[in-house]
Image 1 (cartoon, helix red, strand yellow):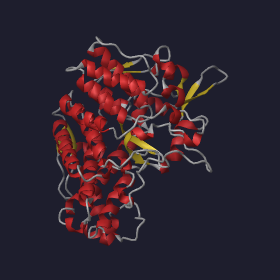
Image 2 (cartoon, one colour; image 1 turned 90 degrees about the vertical axis):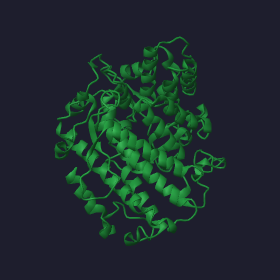
Image 3 (cartoon, one colour; image 1 turned 135 degrees about the vertical axis):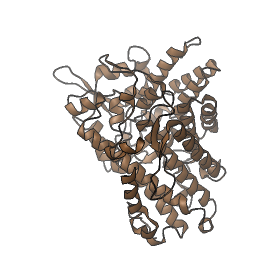
Image 4 (cartoon, helix red, strand yellow; image 1 turned 120 degrees about the vertical axis):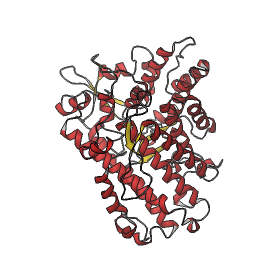
Amino acid sequence: MKKYLFILLSLIAFSSCKKFLDIQPESEVSKEELFTTEEGFKEALNGAYVGLAGANLYGGNLTFSNLDIMAQNYQFTDANYLRIAAFDYTLPSYVDKINVIWTNAYKQIGNVNQILAVIDQQKGVFRGQNYEIVKGEALALRAYMHFDLLRMFGTSYKNNPTFKAIPYVTTVSTKTTPYATVAEVVEKVIADLQEAKSLLKGKDPILDAGYVVGYPKAEKATELKNPSMFLQNRRHRLNYYAVTGELARVYLYKGDQMNSLNNAKEVIASLKFPWTVKEDFFNDDVSKRDRVFYNEILFGWFAPKSEEQLRGLFSRDNPDYSATADQINAIYNLGTVGADDWRYKQWFRLVKTANNSDRFYLQKYIVNSIPLDNLHPLLAPALRLSEMYLIAAEASFDTSPGDALTYFNTLRVHRGIGTNVSAGISKTDFINLLEGEYRKEFYGESQNFFMHKRLNLNIITTSGLIYPPSDKIFVFPLPIDEQAYRN
């Protein structure tokens, strides 16, 4: 990663803070003063969030793009999209996109590493709990990005934990960071997340009993009430519960079911994130309709600049991504429990055509047109309460299948499905149900592909074509300039 390391250094070297941030800070704190004041650290951290929420990463490529195509969620006639759906990593546009993801991810890792390199020496500039919050979030961001790079560019932990995967970069240096194995990366991710969790515990405002999650204009919600803007909207940042949820996700990837379950249960038991009620999800007033289960989101990337892209991908007439009616009917089990599924009823607009090739257009990310207000801001969902229930279900099945079914059925009830899965189901059948629920819940969010990789599952197209699990489909090729450094 020598080439990209020098790019990073040119951006974030100590001697030139002017080149550190991609985004001009909105405050009047100069970049030369970046790490001499608390406000400077906040600016740097906010700059990392803005960069990560851009179209190159979580506001585009890592939430709404190829990962979801490879999960077989859409049907295309475009030759390039068909090649992506068939895991053709030689497609030039795909090669370019992989390069963009890699470069920008390590660029933002470098940004947070610059914060972490100096924050302990500058602890005295912080007021109240802000030192712990800034450092905790920076550590969590570093772990979060490395884990997703691992899930793309490394083998699964289950398949080959000794595979040299990616560099886990923790310093700003002219020295090349060696590639770490899958197991080593996972341990480093866990260590960063554990430290972040420890720092945020007792300091993060979201832990306060008076911090009430809700829609911005809801009477009882307090997410905008803190006099410090930096401490508002904690769900737009890697807060304590988001870090706990990410730990649950990472431990499950490792196969450590006990620690995964404990972290998922901590989020669930907090009762901080209320289930979305039917009246909000189906509200006749579109300005008061919650299509993304907003109150259930532990953490999401604030991505208002993705609005136009999302309209082009999903909801405009003849969007880039759409599915056939038969495809969506199969994904949401229309012949059985799907008829009552809130997601099936609300997330898709049926468009009939003259040749009977009816299509479904995704409405999940619809933003109302001015002058109508929106119930909540536009987010790229990152961690959800529903995922904690799915993780808890999977992690508890071997030791307590009854608890596993309770977690699973609880989620389905809050999606309009009243038919419970009965006791006595086999582990294989239960995993199949979990896979189906991941696909329904995270449609358009790029999480289903990672579940297939983690469990080494077949990927099956709507037409019945089977892609057996293998590194050929699950491991992204490194950028060409990086390939020599893995060996």
